[in-house]
Length: 50
Image (cartoon, rainbow, N blue to C red; front, side, top):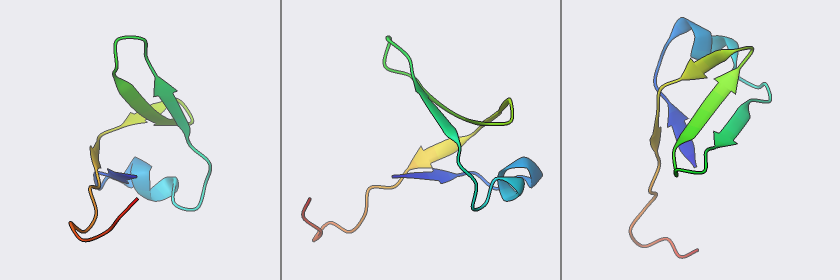
């Protein structure tokens, strides 16, 4: 799960489908209408089991 860093462009993507790009070198990119967003990974609660 990812959390987008706040920005006007990220607000415009609320409720929309975004593209997640998984590069061969392990990098990820989250994009919407050609804009790449800064993000962080949500780790969840330590007591939560997958």
